[in-house]
Length: 588
Image 1 (cartoon, rainbow, N blue to C red):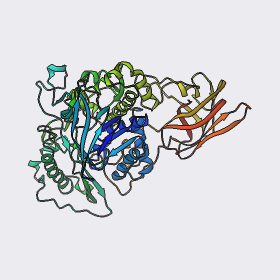
Image 2 (image 1 turned 135 degrees about the vertical axis):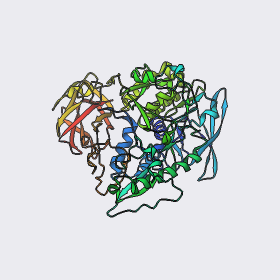
Image 3 (image 1 turned 90 degrees about the vertical axis):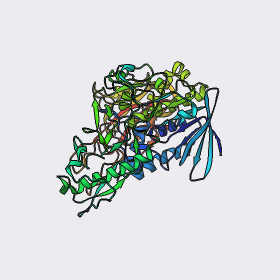
Image 4 (image 1 turned 30 degrees about the vertical axis):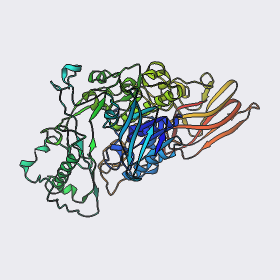
């Protein structure tokens, strides 16, 4: 099969899905190639790692990442991992400009004039070769599978201190990386669940064999045992099959310890092993070299880049290459600010002019990667390169030229799509920019202050009683076709109903399944029902649109407004809050 598109994304994890969706929504004919049966990568049911991101209040990522997670809260109230796979698939399937190829592994391609021209993938389900030709490509595969195919410059391993002067780098460079993990999940039952260990599992019944316990946390209600990790001392790509077998032996041995030998084993009396991964989740392998290599110092300085297109906020979380066999804690945390910016120059190849990338393979040092590699951050990077690709296709520009000539437009489009860029206020444009604005409640003028979330400087947006109104009046009649709204999706939402009493951030799934688990639902702060009305030349208001059961933060409502004198928003109902909280309301 031969397919020709504008933009081809290889890798269907969170980064790749966000890249493909963003490009398709902005008009680029896009192909997304994923080598698994499901989308999501490390966030899928195959690996079951939580979508982590920036620490701190009001730092949660917006854009497509938030859209996916809000979909999950609505359609997956039981927080079931396979249903989350379906949430992701449904998003890709709904895009008319996006062609999805699952179970397709890219193995080769063609290069001409230094540019990648085609990629070729074997699809196991159809037993046929798929060749995709494109103008621009993105590698979101994590392992940078397009690097050896395209000849793109990349690095693998840890830089020594001398190269970038990083305090957390080893004294000398080496080929070591962070390792791979197989995760497990337990489930609570009404009665006792015995554990009979496999004979091939490692035996940790003898205290002399439990050196790994030093600094490791075994509370299965609070952790997915991420520290069951190996592979950093070898090759995290070529040795994956060997690592998988070793991880399974460790994993089942640790479960035997938790159930049969741990001091608090009675606590787990009614817990059984519900799921053990069969696909190792990777943290690091190949990293591309872009026009800029981001370093530890830039992360810790806050990443104030002129070409900022995404942000991180995870700590420098530098896992030891020995992983499980490191005697001590499984990782070293080093403080860095949340947020810190990520530049566009770190998201495209320095020597293959039509190749972009996003995810755990961006252009950064090993130390910087330990802060940028988490999936919510990767999703923001993906959305950024997807938007850049669509603009590049429209104007016939490759990434370096986009960086030089279209950066303001890329940043503005990201902001319009609810991607916060720290340090940059969003400019309100169109018919509402200069219109008179009034309304009920508090802070109505903050609807266009350019900060579409609460932040360290205080509250933003409009708080209003249900049934209250925010009203724009125009100096002369205007036409518009869309109303853009940003509602409060509770960027600080926590899983307050957990039986263990912890206030853990709500993810796409839970560490374990308990008998008393409360269901998920949309954030109580979201506006659920609302009405948009327009003011005609005769001085009367009429309904332009009425929306019910909204569960998204960013909402675009099509309207057909001709020669109107004003527009007003009336929030009618939330998902539980006693008042409405709206960050943006404007027409264009």
